[in-house]
Length: 140
Length: 138
Image 1 (tube, rainbow over the protein chains, first blue to last red):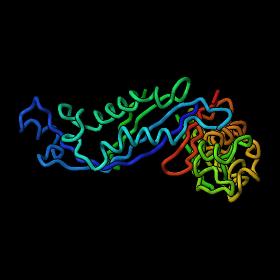
Image 2 (tube, chains in turn blue, purple):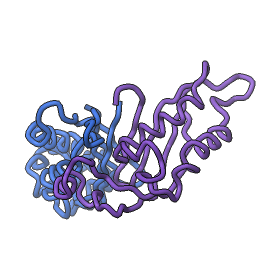
Image 3 (spheres, one colour):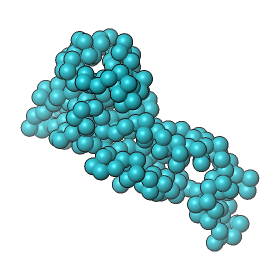
């Protein structure tokens, strides 16, 4: 098995606040991340795709096509935006990095068959580093 | 248990399929198809799998692994033009994928034994692009 991983970066703000909880419960649950004015991170996103290696080109995936897909589905809508206010999926759902990984996987999967038709590469994993001290990984 | 040794080397390469035109190669590989080549500071990680031996407390002697990587990969590839100086890249396109497979092919017979197996080879072409090869059908 062979897997190619590409790393991207985006910066965004968010606020963690669960609608079903009281202000006090949210403060207790999310701590500083519940600050009403929000806060931001420099996210590092890794997208892994898995084989096969094309015999002619020696590549698993057309990286320009992958870059364009990630730019369209993730970087443009998320980079330098407020996730809660500007990304519809997070109007209701709390933009934890767990939920962010699920949202990115779903956005990429929805367009995947169009960008990589037939027996092309499969989306293998999404990895998000929210800060240098934490990382979230979602496998296919 | 998995143990990993890291090494690095710098080399130039060019990605072109011989039968294709300049325009087709440019469409396929972008800037990497420039016929004069370009270079990278490659970083490789070699991961072995096994159990620590009771007498040594080690899965594998990392000094030995370092030597194997040095002999099989770093010495032949460091400060070389891969396409011109390092077979099989005279005929195989030196994409990161093919480089990871070649590193595996060179290292696997030197380290595999009854108590240890090669688990993965990771090749970073840049900080933002890396390939993991786990053996078998690529």
